[in-house]
Image (tube, rainbow, N blue to C red):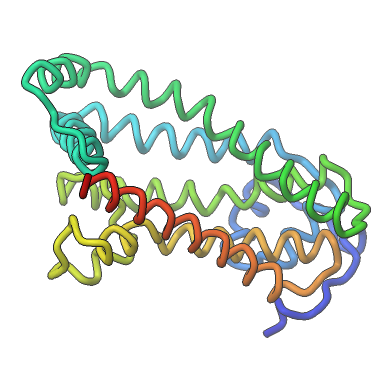
Length: 245
């Protein structure tokens, strides 16, 4: 309930160290984001998030279980969009599997910071340009970077479960709670596109933006969740249509 109230000005918060801020995102997000807004620092937490995610992924991909899981996911992904995998394509994917750990790590080192920049840019445009906010881009980017701690926790949490399940499909998506559904059905595709950690990240980021712009968290979180659900619905629809074609 407290997170839905208008937040105090960020400059009232005392700064804290990297470990305290990373842990605070999980346990006391409002106070932590207030400290981040008062003294925006993104490089350290971004490096921490990258290290955790890349390491967890690399450990999994370095195993035969991880490489096979990646191969299976690639095939299922192609088939979910209506494509049939030929023997030649399968052999090519199989030959590339031993190098997956390097390609995946390199991709994450580029994609994750770029994603944070895109999210921060969108938030800055919406709240500053459209809603008259006065935060700096440095503050917005710092808030977004700190929210990434949740996605790092997801990577560490999911890695042993992925190994046990021999799968790269998220163990925290909603489809895992309804295993009786046909994985090629629309409900399964939709639920599989909605992840509990992404919902947590969305709400956490909404708290951070609410603190930074001194706005109520509830409307921000609701809007962001609606956008996320709309994207999940679109992905599920596209997969179903292409698979049917």
